[in-house]
Amino acid sequence: MIRGDASRRLCLAGLAAAPLLGAGRAVRASALWAALRSPAHVALIRHAVAPGTFDPPGFRLGDCATQRNLSAEGRRQAERIGDLFRANDVARAQIFSSQWCRCLETATLLGLGEVVPQPLLNSFAEDRGRGAQQIADLRAWLAALPLERATVLVTHQVVISGLSAVSPASGEIVVLRRGAGADLVVVGRQPTA
Picture (cartoon, helix red, strand yellow):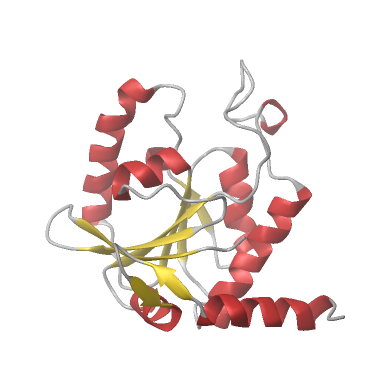
């Protein structure tokens, strides 16, 4: 039986070697990580495991006790995601996060750098009417964002789907390449569960 760090290294090695889901084709993990280390790429991460769906009625952004939060499994998953970045030569990144506690905690537990809250990454799942404008504003912000170094955005399924048409699992990484203007192309996906 493998335990502790040996188990973690074996799991990370398996994830790093696995083919990834790209836009209709398999992408090797090494190519995905090489892309992320190069300019004009960004990693979107859906927050780690937070049991349930949506937030309780009356939740408040500034009060984690009123929100759906990461489970112990979700906190371990977030730490493993950070380990996966480091195992693929991304030890530091510029990190932006939704203001929801589960996203901020995921971003912090990655251990890749300072976390900057970004309201454009907030969920609009309970107010779909603002989704189109928020995604347009997020695209404009991404078009102007310097992407010379690894960049990570921790957010929600609805935001990732709005940007990429990908419906990620909890903790899944979706790497995008920024093209001309606000054009974003899915390079590949890295499951982390």
